[in-house]
Amino acid sequence: MFRFRTALAAAAVAVVAGLAVAAPASAHDELISSSPAADEQVTTVPEQITLTFSNELLALEENSGTAMIVEDASGEDWVAGAPEVVADTVTVPLEPGMPNGSYLVTWKVVSSDGHPTSGEYSFSLAAADAPAVEPTPTAEQTIAPVETETPEPTVTPISAPADGAPWPLLIGLGVVVLAGVVVLIVILTRRKR
Image (cartoon, rainbow, N blue to C red; front, top):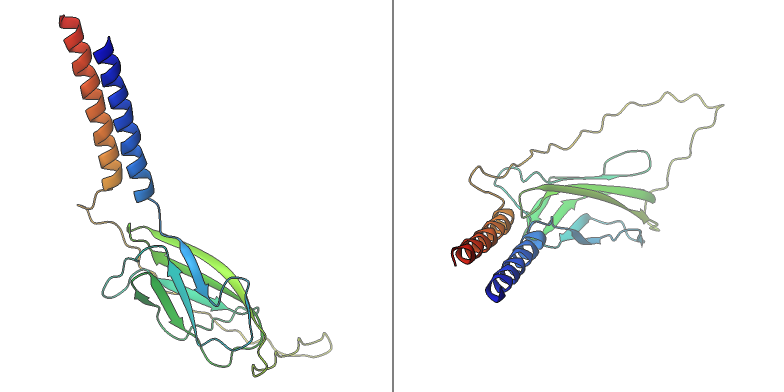
């Protein structure tokens, strides 16, 4: 009976250890800092937005699946070029002449595990040298609305390669199967006696 309990305890420890290793390894990378920061009020017009993540991001030669939009209150996008991915950092240049006000940063990146992740945050600009915000027209003024189209960023989804199996999950399942085999062998050995 002692050997059976020992084998069962060893199997349980192996299963818990396997699952503990598998769980954190499969987590997506997270945004850990940004410049300008979330809810920050900046007093100088930013030249770029920089996002830093908890791990290196997946980057491919042509398109990493990374996209960013920086919109003002009227919905105008102030991004001036393609995002640049360097290790765990994504940077986009901004158009000059941003007016004072609130901005919404919407981002999408591909985590180191190959899965896309996204999010958004806001910051505000209150710079002395920023252009004045145009006044809102009153009902008495007849101003024809100007229709503008904001281009959507091109995002190419990246799927994990066919041979790139989710290793942490497979390792965890392997540990569970191995533990089951050990318990089965112990039970069969015990019955033969």
